[in-house]
Image 1 (cartoon, rainbow, N blue to C red):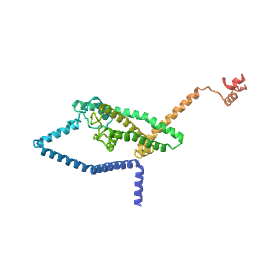
Image 2: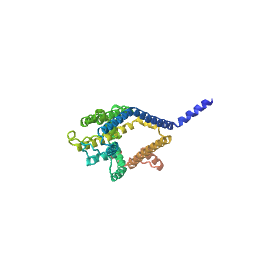
Image 3: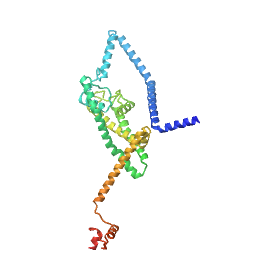
Image 4: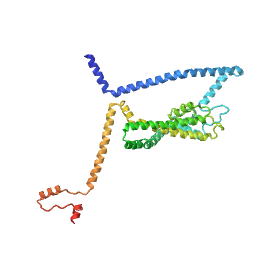
Length: 352
């Protein structure tokens, strides 16, 4: 008996707080996902890191043994300074002639900053550049988000809302099923045009990249992860790339257009009825009630506006008294005059 009451109370408690329970489960699932991902990356990458570290240590020992005039401390100092400069995008290799801060390279840098991609291969060197980067990003990132939102919403009308309305009227399919099919087809087209095909192009243009590395770069860039381990245009050889500035400019345009297309796909998937129902599970009950009340208020206001417009139209139309109204007025006035139609009516015109 006690167990039954306790179980019933627990069920009622959970039933009354479904959104909180779902939200708690969502947090636990996300933390578990993070932990599982960290464990898998650690298992996969740590052996490669250890092997590369041992290889570099062996190369350092070989260099010191073959060059006895160089001390270990001086080599350590040179390597530290070289790695520090490399972190700022400056290399001392003999065949490296690229410039990080010409106009096109700076344009590429601003596009990666404002879209929060941030490859990290080029960073401001001076204090003035760092201060301006803070000020520039402080205003530029919100403006970029607003700009992308406006562009995405306009594109959504053309590629999502109008096609769905057209095919819904033509085929009489369920909107939820039609929206899911449309989102799947749109995602496949974007993956083909902006990931698969550009990856093959990068394989032909970047001599040190294979297809997996090119595919990895396209995905990391278009999702604004931007790890910076692969950046196109690092090899500025005239034989390989006779027009390096144009190549960097084309990459900038590709990244911006690709980001817009990815946002369109994400917004399309986000507006699916299945996604809306799934999101509702994690909303607070008060928010649900407020959202439904807001929807009812908006619908009531729209209906009131339509009724007021209809009443205005009726009030502006000429008043034509009915036969019953004139008969009632005759009985009240005791007048036995025959019925006369309202001036301007069709019957009056015929009598004339």
